[in-house]
Length: 123
Figure 1 (tube, rainbow, N blue to C red):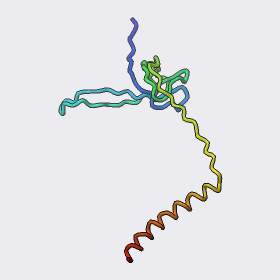
Figure 2 (figure 1 turned 180 degrees about the horizontal axis):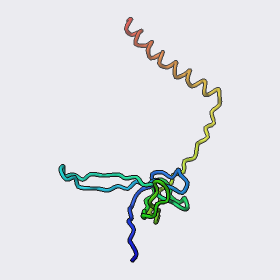
Figure 3 (figure 1 turned 135 degrees about the vertical axis):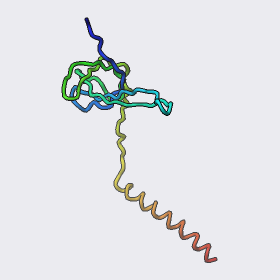
Figure 4 (figure 1 turned 180 degrees about the vertical axis):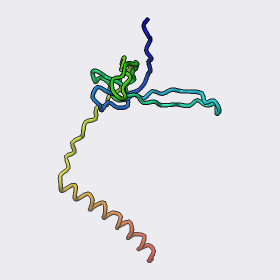
């Protein structure tokens, strides 16, 4: 007889380890006393053989034999890939003279604003 393995759906939280990802699985249960829906989040260390998973991906986990001290699950498939936003640094061309001149002007303006009300008070 072939035994059916447990499966879960979750979201990849971290992929900083080699061939391992951390997946958060959210379950919702009805609280017996308060009659409210309660969210419970469980984190699993999951084996990712090809290092394909990125943070934000939705994956299907499959139960497996113990692979390490904490790994008991494998990535069965990647259901949806997370959108990767590329951010390129903008090169600012600031000359040293302009960088020094701007703070002096900013300091000069508040002094003038403070001096005007004093003159009005003396009149």
